[in-house]
Image (cartoon, rainbow, N blue to C red; front, side):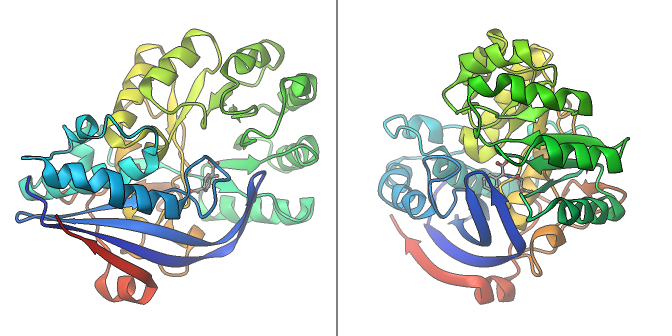
Length: 367
Ligand code: NPG
């Protein structure tokens, strides 16, 4: 498909409350939207890299630079760039999966809009609503945490995820579990522990957690397999799983029994589907992670989460959990679920006036 130009739009979206994790605290999202313009249709993608390289090595200014200097030129030079062949056009660009995912998604969205097919249909969605959980950052105190948990359960969220780090783990989990004996509960450490903490992490076992997510470093895949021998709570990997190949290897050595899929982290929705398939073939359930996306990224995540092997509720919360004003029409929680968009492509687009209001910079890249 011929690409006329690509707009790189930065939007500033204040979060309703600060979101603190073991790798930092965020109160505003600085989001890069990729808008691909073709003669047949426009397409949108959201780049999920953070303002700083705290979650992974990617960061938003770097992503924008890579897109402009290394990802777009081969697309403009290609005869017929499509979502199916962009990966081949980028074989000389190592890593930068979040940047690649944003551009690939915008191209895929344009293709699907041009032929009137939804992303859900394209990926193989099997349900029209997805179960939603909520991820709670590290708060100031246990009473504050309990209040937040009660508030989200009251809104209908069907699963709670607590961020943990050394010094904020067993006590917090115990308090939440005692106050809510029957809820689906899980924790996420974002790499904050060492294998030497195995016995300490095993203290979470009595609290019947669905899973513990990425307790050890991204590259410590074998150590996760060791940890899984000491801890009874199922180990889920996030940061370590950067591709379908990485998923297959981690599963093969027993490093995880559940996988969090984030399309940005693996380089796009097509690779995300391959991760899904590899896990399914191994009997490993997956769930959809979140990166505090605007409605643009959320729409595509919800479509992905409708695939059959997404067996746990995702970090796919409603727009109002994050923002006073989303850039698209808001995603609204209904009975603990979000509806999978059915319109062509990702099924939503930024509302022009809201987009204009939130925009902090706009760059048009032409062939
Ligand atoms: O609801 O989108 C959400 C947030 C879910 O906890 C969440 N995301 O490590 O998984 C994570 C974490 C994250 C947020 C990671 C922002 C990177 C950036």
